[in-house]
Image 1 (cartoon, one colour):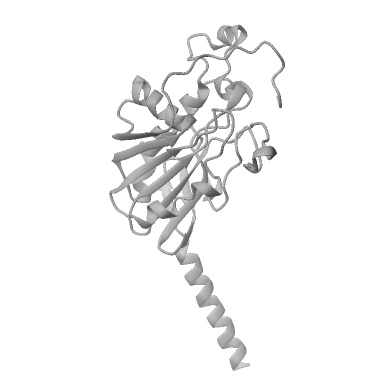
Image 2 (cartoon, helix red, strand yellow; image 1 turned 45 degrees about the vertical axis):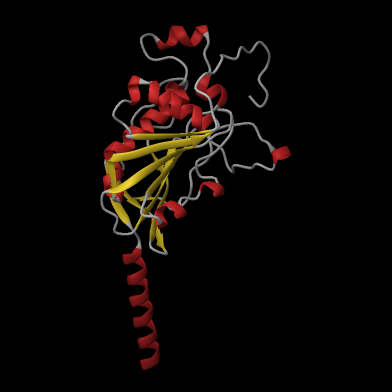
Length: 251
């Protein structure tokens, strides 16, 4: 009987230690619980904007609402809707229009650490900030807080049409994916200190379409003051509009 009591006590101690090891931060929408390992705290699938559905489809991103309960940030959020590319061996997992999330890798006990925000590529049509090859542990090992983001893609992110122009009124039109990126950078400014990052030391970087996004953000007055440095890896800042007069595939 004494052995059973000792075993139960040991289990309780181990459970308490495991619970205590769960990193919890407080951001402007509530508390977020991540996971910890090898000196790195990881938070996945944190909403930085409201779901872009219903009246918010083909509209600028709206702020994420406050939560009463702690967010379980141990699973990546879904990818934004995109065509499947099994021919290229790319599977970005489950998809949903409710996809405006980001992920944070931070060194344990970080304080005023530099921040790097990754913008994925994919021709503005495919991609996911939570893809396995965008794991931020290498950066966190170097003392950097790493952030990867999702943004709307394809016809949901960059579609322009006269009907939408009439609906938008005075609101910004099209390039919703770029507006999402600005919203994510505003989230970083407001919240990254809770993860140990320094909002005055934010570097944005990306490749391909992400690199083009970096150049667009450098030129945009909407992004002024949201980052201090920028790295553009293989991408141009000039994009011609694409006119579509036929049915879109995978729509």
